[in-house]
Amino acid sequence: MHCGEEPKAQGAPSSNEVAGDCKQHTCDAAGSEQVTDEALGTACGDATASCANGVANQPDTCDDAGTCQANDNVACAPYACSANACATTCAADADCAAGNYCNASGMCAPKVANGASCAAANACQSGFCADGVCCNTACNGLCLACDGAGTAGTCTPVAAGTPDPACGAGEACSDATTCLKIAGTPCGLPDECISNVCTAGECAP
Image (tube, rainbow, N blue to C red):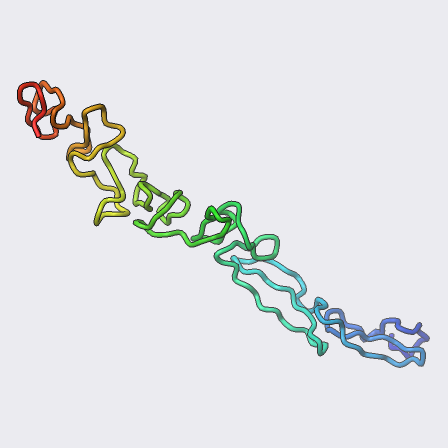
């Protein structure tokens, strides 16, 4: 009901009051309607904060002229949108947007390609970190490496004679991803040696 149609108390809402329009419609003692602006920052229009597809929807608010302003939606990447707002730090990869990971500093960062340095598999696009670089496979087999010169990021057999902790004493990698005996190690047959030469009971260089 309008202010003049029925006595209303000073400051009572007018029937013209519209929720969320950034205006206050109230009655005065003389039965007239008074229109004033809502306070700056008052929720209006789409006043609900939400998350959708990594974007935080910011509630609309009234400006200082009594007009409802649509606030910009915010793309949260590299962080995830959670609890209707963009995260600003992370404790786990789930706190980050797709394609990003939570680093040791508690910050979301883009996952990196094969061959780039890594400290953990979650930093890699491939999901594998081997020999300090992102790799195309787990590369955890005998005499394999992912940090070779010119082949970083691709798991390849190491050069013959390269030591491997999994090889026994007096052994090193052969060119067939197996461990064979190095020069000077006792042998009985040539195929026990990397050089394929066993002379006087020892592998030859």
